[in-house]
Length: 296
Image (cartoon, rainbow, N blue to C red; front, side, top):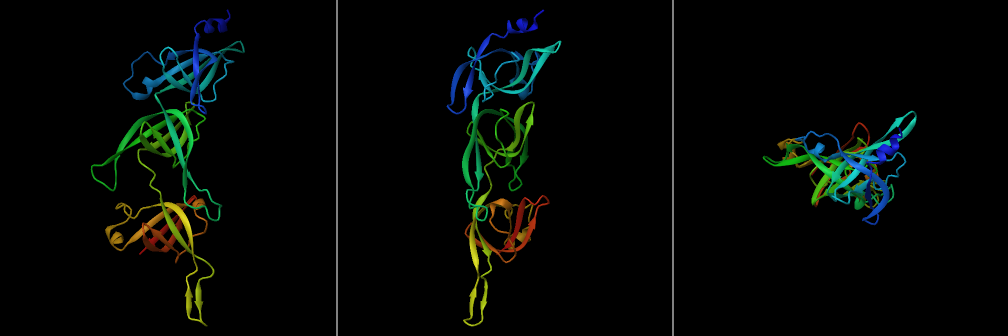
């Protein structure tokens, strides 16, 4: 029995494929069938959106990994694929599908200047794909009471470029990516529904020209200004106690490759129009970030 002929007899739907560059749908030579994963009607969100794809083992998958069923208009992006074989020859190919109803835009803030002076981070769109979200949990915002934010699973086709700190904009909501990974052949991420907390500020680094001229009595601060982007913990009552807040202390965190110098004590920074002095500099254990402990 030719199992390929048997499988092909049921794989008769000609799919439309999505062109991400042109944002258009086109018919292509991809024929197959969409099947339920399980006949059981789940009461969970994700199983209601999952389907199976049956196609030829030689079928060419579109670069967008996104297809549409013409008869229903349902849109799916394709995850992991596996082939079924008999006597060493593949006769069919099964893929995991996830249903989507809208495109998601990925925005990323990156430095645009040289390594010695990267400048403020600039936001740019780095991808647009059909995607989906799923609520994972809710948590109370530490700085507020009875104010909550959602923790979400974010889902995209496997080729999507998704990184920590990216903004995932979907159906009018903005999610901040906390971590990204592959699951079932899809690009998954953990995200929280909030905007990027990082703020532009000016860092004043004390250079080699600082000092006192004994002949003229002039004092040179030698401060060189750098435009830097980071986030602060000064308004977070769980991080600093009330006495520290009243004393005007602030902790600013900045990625090491987002600042053009090595920070040191006696440097200064201007945050929200207020001048602070750096009295301690520390690093995270992976040496990816600087923590600048500042005071008025």
